[in-house]
Amino acid sequence: MSRQLTGRVIENRQIGQDVFKITVESELVSQNALPGQFANVRCGRGLTPLLRRPFSICSVDREKGSFDLGYQVRGEGTRLLSETAPGSQLDFIAPLGKPFSACGGFDRIAVVGGGIGVFPLLFLLQIFKCRESSAFLGFRSSEQAVLLDEFSRHSGRLVISTDDGSLGEKGLVTRAFERELDKRAFDMIYACGPVPMLKEVGRIADERGLKCQVSLEQRMGCGIGVCYVCACKVKRQGKEEYLRTCREGPVFWSREVVWDD
Amino acid sequence: MTSVDLSVNIAGLKLKNPVIAASGTCGYGRELAEFFDLNRLGGISVKGLTLEPRMGNRPPRIAETPAGILNSVGLQNPGLDAFIREELPFLRTLDTVKIVNIAGNTPEEYCLLAERLSACDIDAIELNVSCPNVKEGGISFGKSPEGVKRIVSQVKPFCGKKPLIVKLTPNVTDIGEIALAAQDGGADAVSLINTLLGMAIDIYSRRPILGNNFGGLSGPAVKSIAVRMVYEVSRRVKIPVIGMGGIVKGEDAIEFMLAGASAVMVGTGTLVYPDACLKVLEGIKDYLEKTGHKSCHDIIGKLRLW
Ligand SMILES: Cc1cc2nc3c(=O)[nH]c(=O)nc-3n(C[C@H](O)[C@H](O)[C@H](O)COP(=O)(O)OP(=O)(O)OC[C@H]3O[C@@H](n4cnc5c(N)ncnc54)[C@H](O)[C@@H]3O)c2cc1C
Ligand SMILES: Cc1cc2nc3c(=O)[nH]c(=O)nc-3n(C[C@H](O)[C@H](O)[C@H](O)COP(=O)(O)O)c2cc1C
Ligand code: FES
Image 1 (spheres, each protein chain N blue to C red):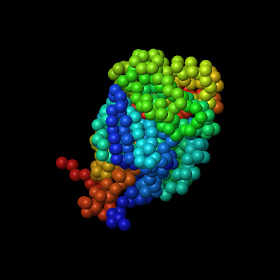
Image 2 (cartoon, rainbow over the protein chains, first blue to last red):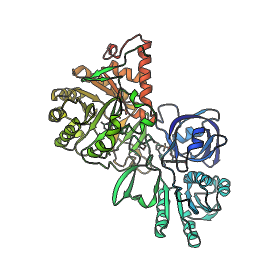
Image 3 (cartoon, rainbow over the protein chains, first blue to last red):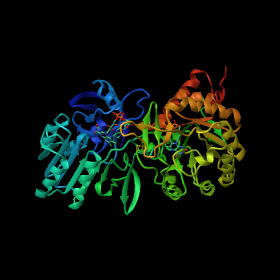
Image 4 (cartoon, rainbow over the protein chains, first blue to last red):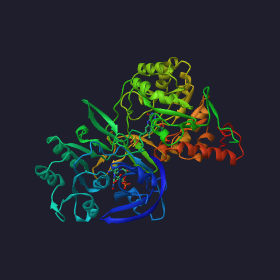
């Protein structure tokens, strides 16, 4: 169950171009958070920016009682977060949202991540124990490619793509992923990243009849399910409806998502 | 033990304190109950309800503005039957005043909603004639004194013994006149303000941020407008006034009470701090103690103009 908490910032450091990782003390989150869940963080202290900002939990340290968030500086909220000094208190609500599904104890999994979408996938690889895991990560260029050591530590196979070819393969991560599918079988695909990427991963999985879950982003108000602003259109039993990304999501079965809303 | 009497009376309802969770920002209570004991609230006004289920508007449905937000949810809700079946059983367990906010496309829909709800275990009906986010209905009834008087007088007989609170839109020239019309139509109380119609633009894509193009502004950004309107309305009507718009702390609520509000609602504040209502309540209590007052009634409408 989620709580409104404050925790001491242990570390807040730049790990790539505009990309930071913040480590925050919280026994509750480190013990209870599951991959795919997020924290809704109050980045400033005043009335602007007013709303909290959602960030996926990127990893937990159960011994130290802390968790990490990875984030890219985009606007005012993330800029303020990047200025948060170690030792200060962070105000957040966590863990929130529906986690990735691990039921069925999948044997061979693939994670496909793009940009800031890679963060929840690291946590997933850390926690979900399976026989074989492959990670396919896409970034704009090598400067944005982050947490590669951590990913290679927690996955059996790591494939990197960059838009400009400055690291790994040049081109879209979905292409590298699709090629690998011709050689290898997976029981479950987990994806997080920009919508065009997720849509493509969903299409690829669908074509081959593979199970696939995606973690989506939507502008949020409360993050706890009371305001209904974070709508995501899904189709269930032939009926389209708007679900709350913060509550019924952010993780959805790709098959159910209506992409062209 | 608290030394001050926080209770207030509105249209025959006794609230244990003047703080009510505002419609649309507390769902149907269940999620908020994970964060604090809802029985500590003076009341709760649940998400706007329509006769049939409503999908709501296309996302994005929220944009941030300086000290505020624009929303364009568009009354997404499961409809009356699902509300009675799935949400009411939980609400009934609460020891707080339960208000159901209703919206319709036609006067008949409002009347049907009121009739069905008047037989339910709830305490009051809040007539939403002020939602800026739906095309038909809602606000189209709330913009003229004639429209308001007509819809209120049509719905009132269907409310049975339940008090009827009419929620007013600030998107009008003279809100005092609208409030008077609600009173003439038979309203037991008025609540204000609903959101102010606004717009935010992404300058790079050159498109509105909201999928619905326009949205309703709320939060601290609207507070001074809301206080002014509560003052204007309180002067004009005899029925109780419930004030809201940008309340995030006790001092904000006190401004509304001095301006004439018998109770306050907290909306956007809850999105940032789930227990914002309790903070507001604590702040009201502190103020009363600090200023040596024994009860909320000592300050309601006690503004002294220059
Ligand atoms: C479930 C979820 C998980 C996320 N996980 C991460 C993560 O692990 N790392 C990361 O860097 N980012 C993540 N994001 C995106 C992150 O929330 C936004 O980048 C951030 O809110 C931007 O805030 P800002 O003030 O810097 O930007 P601004 O553009 O100034 O923000 C303005 C408003 O738009 C909202 N907004 C802007 N972009 C987004 C977006 N992409 N998604 C949702 N709301 C947005 C903001 O919350 C704010 O309300 C996640 C989003 C969601 C919904
Ligand atoms: C996300 C959101 C949804 C809302 N939904 C409703 C609604 O269904 N019915 C209604 O009468 N008012 C609705 N409102 C308006 C609020 O109840 C309140 O009148 C307004 O937001 C001003 O108060 P605030 O500044 O404290 O939020 C909504 C407001 C927000 C922010
Ligand atoms: S952000 Fe409020 S319901 Fe999802």
